[in-house]
View 1 (tube, rainbow, N blue to C red):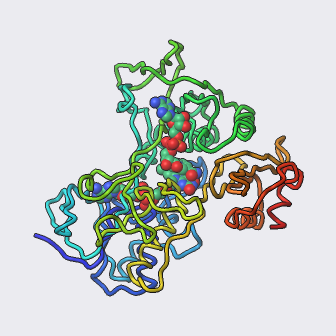
View 2: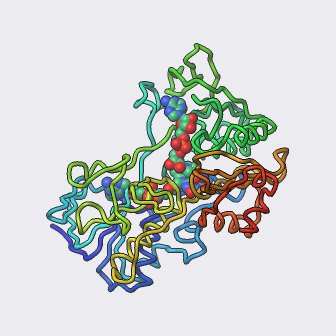
View 3: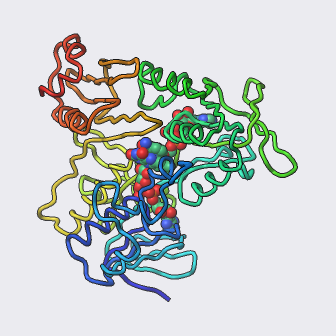
Length: 426
Ligand code: FAD
Ligand code: NAD
């Protein structure tokens, strides 16, 4: 039993939604394109899961955040796919792929063949068991990657009002979930191995601003350590988190955000991998001609940085997906993907954006006492990265534009004095 399509998108997340939009804009005939997704719903804007989805009042729920609403594009509901003749094969896991034969085998036993495959399988959350800690399947331990995880987190949160949550990990999930837990009136302690949170991106000075803000909201920090075990009661619920130094944190619930692994397994041994992802060229084409890779799972050349990178952010997923479709549908007119890395977050009343690369010397500017502030990264005499907290839409556009131009910086003191004004003048 099997079906055949011209184009198959494997994975039904953010990148899949934006690829579908681009296919529709460029024109695909009914029956030519199919999306296969393990998730039971049409592609949606995943960032909503740690923000609007967790609000205690008027939380975001589907269909309000299907792609591509997050980039001010159409909202692609299941009806939209039907109207455009795009097949959604949902709730279906692909269990093997044969790149040479151009076929995928689903867990339900169906063989789906394609002429062109776009791999958009994203990533999975790392589990504590991979670091030697057991007990993550307890009913009040939550991870957050998909809608099912988010529903579970909401249920557990609602049963813990006024109680204690331990958040494991000081990255994006930790930072955003801690804020959401506080908004849901839960006492939060964050535990992470680094000396500051968001160590992958924030400088100590930037981290210190957010940490102080979190402390003002009642969040406690236990830094420089990891958990060693859980105390679990007879109902299979965690009651406390035991840290490596032996200290004990009582817990009514636990949220774990300790990073991700790209979903590459189906293609290992068939496609070239790099930096944990599927290696793609500037057209997002993988090492086998008929296969493209986009979003979290792809490692592609970031021209501005002159390096191959795998990025784990929504803007990269959206734009790499659209570029891949452009390269497939209009190869003559589509050049190399020229991407400016863009990361952002919103927590409590705060909001920041970052563009470029965080290497080299850092120059901070602005008001770190609660006003507008930011930082520039200067590498080999050029501006290569910019961060801004509390900016307006125009100011964010300005730092993005300045960062893309990579202007020469020969006077760091002047950059510090000019602050945001420097980007405005570029
Ligand atoms: P995904 O969106 O993860 O989609 C992958 C899809 O592939 C899933 O539907 C999955 O089920 C499917 N799949 C995988 N393997 C198979 C298989 N074998 N068979 C069938 N289907 C399969 N980024 C930001 O820039 N800003 C944010 O504020 C932000 N917030 C986030 C909040 C949360 C809670 C999470 C988890 C991520 C957030 N991100 C954010 C990151 C962003 O969501 C990802 O970079 C983006 O979703 C990547 O898109 P993708 O399509 O590559 O992968
Ligand atoms: P992350 O890589 O941002 O942070 C992982 C954190 O886990 C580290 O900062 C570290 O503190 C901690 N850690 C690592 N190993 C640990 C261990 N053994 N024990 C305890 N802590 C450990 O990953 P994340 O926060 O899990 O986020 C998952 C994914 O979701 C990422 O791809 C991220 O980009 C994405 N995401 C992005 C946003 C955003 O861009 N605003 C928001 C949410 C999620």
